[in-house]
Amino acid sequence: MIPQARPAEIILHGARLVDPAGDDPAGDAVAIGEGRILGVGPHEQLKGLATPETVSLCCEGLSLMPGMIDGHAHLDREGLKSVLPSISGARSIAEIQAVLREVAARTPPGQWIVLSPLGTPPLFLDGWSGLADGRCPDRHDLDAAAPDHPVWIRPAWGYWSNKADLVCVANTAALALAGVGRDTPSPHPLVEIHRAADGLPDGRFSEATRISIVETTLMSAAPGFDVATRTDALARSMDTYARFGTTGVYEGHGVAREVIAAYGALRDRCKPGMRATLVVSPSWSGVDATADMAALIADWTRWAKRGFADDDRLRIEGIYAEIDETGEGLVRARGGCCTGWAGFHLDSGAPRAMVRELLLEAARQRLRVSTIFDDVMGLMEEVNRSQPLAGLNWVRGHVATLDERALGAIKDMGLMLVTHTNRHIAKGGSAHLARLGADRCNDIVPMRRILDRGIPVALGSDNLPPSLLHPVADLELRRDHGTGEHVAPDQALTRREALALATAGGANLLQRGDELGRLKPGYLADLVGFPGDILTMEADELRHLEARLALVGGQIVLRQA
Image 1 (spheres, rainbow, N blue to C red):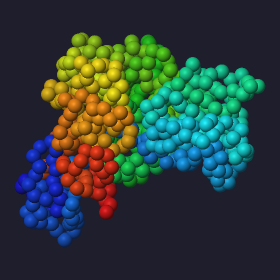
Image 2 (image 1 turned 60 degrees about the vertical axis):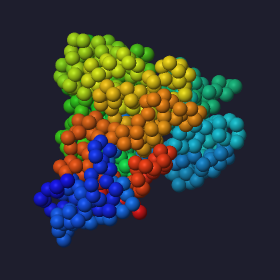
Image 3 (image 1 turned 90 degrees about the vertical axis):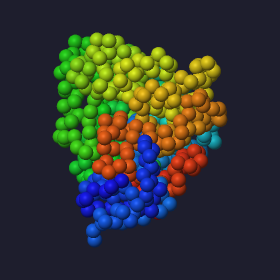
Image 4 (image 1 turned 90 degrees about the horizontal axis):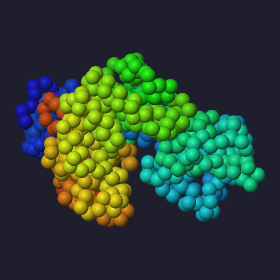
């Protein structure tokens, strides 16, 4: 490709050039200036763009390609996992107590101690069942190790394990500060307050749900993640995602006030090392059926964007939609704006009739909407009949199963899709097969059908884990990790096709396909370098692969040997 005439600030050379969404460029080098790709081709050809100030980086042994874009990232969550003192290595109550004593020794008396969840990260599948004692610790166990502190072992995030059985534990001082006593009722039928024979709480809480209710109700007195903590964690998250080759994210589940505040605080501190497009998470608490939906949307959008204008690395657009007829989300939201691990408002769901009005008004205003649920997509079909959605690029994430009728409706509405193969192939593929039967196996994450229909689609990690190369491998192998069973192999994609969705597909999701996701002159220099030949290595190797180099807008955000 003929380079542009401007001088290069950086020249990367010696690489295997990979452009998954097109033909791989001839040559081994990329010249970068003013944040964009100036030229792609042989190093000898691009040397003419060099000046004495040009940085020359040898990328021998690397596959250099466009940075990947995570279509459902939960980026903010990753850095929070390392904030709390960890008990993950403990295999007995005594070992938990040893960790707690150590933390208590360096914590002023009376100050809260909040520990990471029981079990083994990152999925916390074992919880307390991994303890040699065969039981969960109770308040007395925690009292023995830290009698002078309120102590709480936080619940895990249920979607890490994909199991709805959360457990957390508080000691006596924590229960007293939280006001949890003999007569305290459960805040919801899904929550059990465990009690001793005398009727007093024993400190243990269990929840038959994936998103904790306890932490924002019964234990709302315990400190959550403040904005400063979230800001520091967000910076760490960006470093982690860059290490796996991700240079951009779309937060399709919506983000809450404190997450937007963290993005703003980080931007005030430095230029973020990640492009982020944030969808607004609504908060329905206090909103009734007579609300003026146009004014409500305007208010939500106003607070989301307050204090900073959209820029090249941070954009706020659209709104998230979810139906909640039970009011469960409103119960969770009693703790105010603190969202815990979630990062989205816990009351982001509303009754069906109100969500329908939201969709109608969003369509009138040509505002983008994102959802992850089939029932909302059904409402979208209703709205489409009176207010055509084509051209609005609304988003349906967490694609699990779609039959031919659903695919036709998606095509008609012009929806964009985001997959969640970490769950629906790698963890739950066999369960889908058992539920649907062999005749409908090709409805499970039907990627070949999606591409054949020309429906735009991107890949999402859901932070489970944060590497998009797991979904790339899933789409090629179509294998359930737990059972080893192959899941609708006719829907498999080639390596190049899957990588194209992780790069150019993600760029289209961000509505920036004309400047991101390709290895072409004029495109933004968001690039990553992986060791080896990313197109020919074994698919299972991708799950362990880390980038050696990452750039966002020509700025080096990762460089490791």
